[in-house]
Length: 151
Image (cartoon, rainbow, N blue to C red):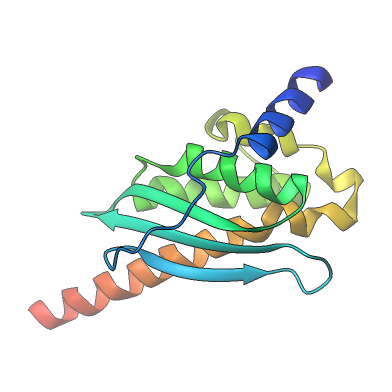
């Protein structure tokens, strides 16, 4: 991807992040993520119904990389199943860690493919992704508990 296009995508998602603003709705799973080494603090809330991520919202104070990564993550994951979200998450983390990954499923998140050249920015790009992983794990745990209750 051309560097000017990458910069434009990152800048657009920083200046005009989508899905920003929390709501008061108990059907959402909420989590707070912060980076102890900088100002990045993101509150995420996700609504998962029947194994599909219906909505994700966020708010907080964060740098351009963290904010844009959060916005791009949300755009990428809304409408995906939990299994699809897990696969995208693992491929994104592998990309950031310079491991093998499938770039065809990352959509706009591919703009961070060379963030490893700036090791101090990796946490910025990953913070909200770590949060969504915790939310997904919580959904998985809740579903396995429900599955055991039915037996």
